[in-house]
Length: 407
Image (cartoon, rainbow, N blue to C red; front, top):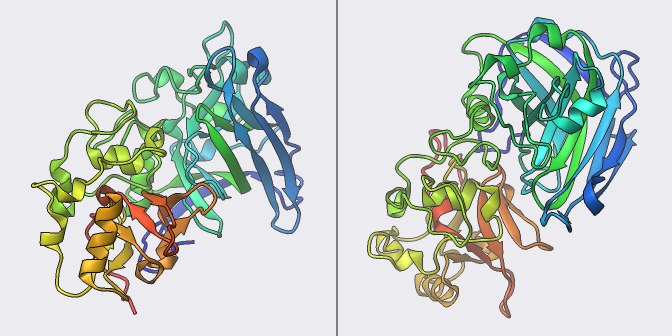
């Protein structure tokens, strides 16, 4: 559900929709999913699958850890076999997942469907890299934070049946070779659907209310949906990390405040793609979720945060979706705000300064995200109480045209 002032997903005109999977007992779309852990060389990733009858949703839960012999992330997945409804009428559309999660920071969610294979289970283990293992089409996706179920749209052209069984990453994209794209003939005879947590370490929790294929009229997608589509459609989109690592709901805004858009190099302590900007890497790349922008960036001559602040309270906006996140100083002086920030090395906010409906804080992991999925920084309480230490790169956005009125 989109929160006030945060334009996430808007209604669009839909011409054809085919439900593939539901958990409401409907005969044509109810299938038995089975959870499968990574069997490779002593894989230790574990997960569970259950159906929540009250929520009418499947619940996929677990943790992906390194395979000891490979020192690389394993996987968990839930799979169902059967004769799924004919979805060929929506071949030019999107796969639509109605989902929610308590782990929006997890960067390895994937979905797959199999058709035209000699063995669906074999194809979805080989990813086209093994002989006769074509026909299992896979794509990655991310889930926005929030308590309500949200529609996550993945263009069917973001799927490929050639991907690495070691990482889940596509080896050939549909945009590169039409031969790997799902066709109407394939969508007419789907025999297996899978949900994955793969290629990224961490806890993964996913609740799925439905899986559908929808044909969307030309030009009908909202701005938010178009951004989500570009996130998964290709290996590298302007303003975003490569699709397999992207976690944001759309591209980083151009013209970020405080000179952040001038930081075109990702000076972070983990390897990322060389052409990522600092904001792309820190706010939207799954590889950096435990990293941060350089300490005391706010004091750099080309940033000079405190000389740029307005009189009274300054509002800090999400660098992707423009949602208002923090306003400071509130309940203290500007000098107090500056001292708190300087003590830690990153802009630091107290409870009164947090726009709570737009900021999602995991007090266990310390990870902080916006309601539209942007990684913001860390929750680091001290002797004075709760404190949000944020990356300026991720709170330097410009407001949307219809800004939320803060009261």
